[in-house]
Length: 130
Image (cartoon, rainbow, N blue to C red):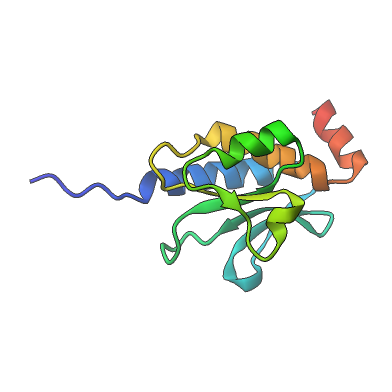
């Protein structure tokens, strides 16, 4: 009898790829306010990664100012404006466990877009030179 497939394995793998990518951006650091992973630059959050302990479904939240990118992210299965009023400022929450969820590469593009809206110009220049 085959072992049951872990439904969180793929989403958690995507989350980890996104986390590694985000931490590779100039000046990025990870902190754990409220017990959740957030990635910051210049003391400002550019990606919320939630928890990876299975207590909540895996997902990411990013700030997307470009209208086309924002619209694309909002078309992902289960995507919605972020809570606590953040959605009004362009923040989008994207669940990773939905069927048809975006691949890690696209999520990384969105994380970079979010980083570019938050990071100081000198760090964006460093990224562009990189």
